[in-house]
Length: 431
Image 1: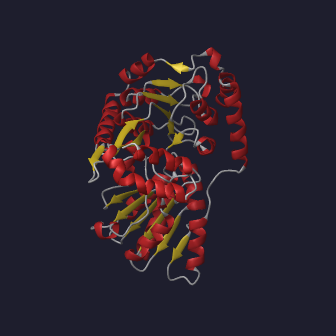
Image 2: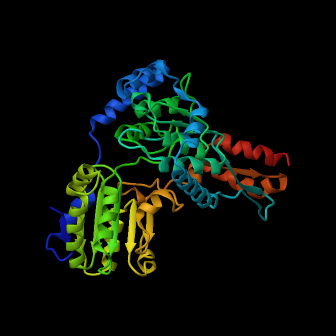
Image 3: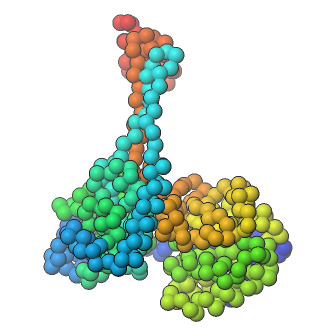
């Protein structure tokens, strides 16, 4: 039965709090297991990676090259259905165009004291991309992760992906070729993340690791943050829709299910000010689930984590949406901008009735790698900046140091750091 709430319910606050605070994470034993895998890969390198690959992916890396040759990628692209190849090319083009606009500019200025200062941006040297290959293979996600790295100017883009039985989906190889990935390795799981973070004889060490994965992959990234940079710790996917009564209930049901079919722990929530639409959408969800090839997953997700919430006005829904800080937020109304102007926390917002979240997953342009689990309160989706770093610079001449140096000396002395004070004062004395 669909979980239903109304803001007029006497217990609404408590039940909504429970919905917000519900955790859809993994078994706590995952953290322990991942820590052991990371330590093993750090200690034994390729030998540990080979053992975990044989255990989890069912093939001995010694029987195949761990690295997939570029020729295989070219063959996969050449053999791709023409319409699908065109779709991937369109997606890549739009993703690149959007991310090109994110490139930051260097800055430089001189102040009244004649002191020169500024910032210079540069790309990391090596980026590691994790591409899932277990429950499903997502070439769209590969494009979303690789293209911002290329736009940033990363010189070495490494991709790891699990290959059960040693086999890889040719669509993934084709997408890697379109995206411009430099090297691909047929390993997955926490062991792949550990190999990228620490490096092995075969796998080069990365500076940043990005890309979605299962609970073990997410936990490995969390534990290795600091050894390497990461994009985010991603959790189960989620969508929140704010819809008025003018919407087609079948459309709304399809949008809710577009996230529910990802995983049994995904979450789909509808806010509406029309009780009739709420009823119609609930019925449409049940009807559409039966038609999906992903019915088992979608049903588990909807029954465990789905919700329909009736509000007195759509404006009332926005503070509730901010509490959820969803990965995806659809504003399915004729004029979405007034509501959008009030949204504070969301990974990405889809405006109007004709902008289903799913179009953003593929060909919209903005990145679909987004914060989950209420992390949109303090973080953003993947961007070019995740593959870049800013270096500030400062230059003083004798006159400039004479202007600001005495204050530095006084502050250093006040903090009890005499060597700091001396390093400035000794220069001031010799001007």
